[in-house]
Length: 143
Image (cartoon, rainbow, N blue to C red; front, side, top):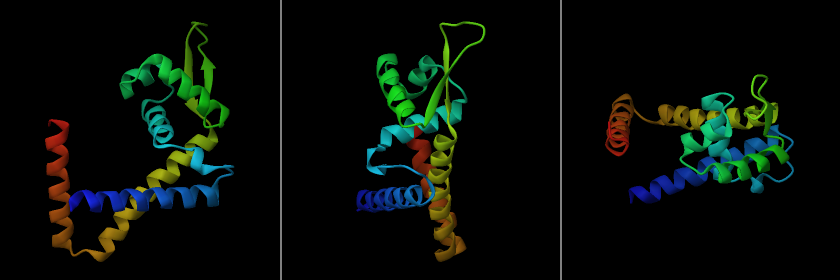
């Protein structure tokens, strides 16, 4: 039962992200943006101008697979590579304006969903929901 609820939430959030991205951004085919794309974009935002190796380490992927995905993201104009000024062998990856906007839209979709829940749930329900979600997160993250 809980899995179905999370599946419903997932599909709602994905549909909302696609709708907002299509409204705001000039993306020719949003269906070509996968969960992996968003995972990479979020990691790049979180780390802040990482190297390919740092992305691989953060996401626990191989450097060759990261290189393939970063090249796809470059072709879609979500990221760009910047050569290091001090070591010409090193490249940093940064979000383009389009990449930043897409990550921002995704964050806003999640925050708006949370705000919607706050509007329909009683304070005691919100406190219970938060406590249960935090407990679940602690148990799966090993805290």
